[in-house]
Amino acid sequence: MALFVGPLGMQELLIILMIALIIFGGKKIPELAKGLGQGIREFKTSLKAGEEEGQGTSQAGAAKDS
Image (cartoon, rainbow, N blue to C red; front, side):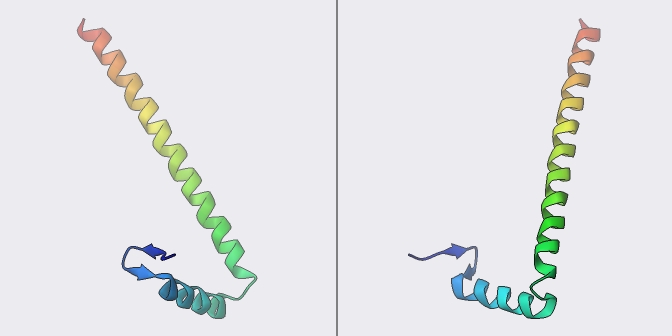
């Protein structure tokens, strides 16, 4: 089974992960992943809030035009 992520194959990803483990250490990587996950979650919630705000203003604008 071949696993490809863009131009990187499985071997390249393993090498990158091993280098990250050596540089940051085993204790720091979960902390980095947790921070990344929180950042992604905040980004998604802000996008949803922006979409809801945009829909509310477009509906209000349509009501004013009628």
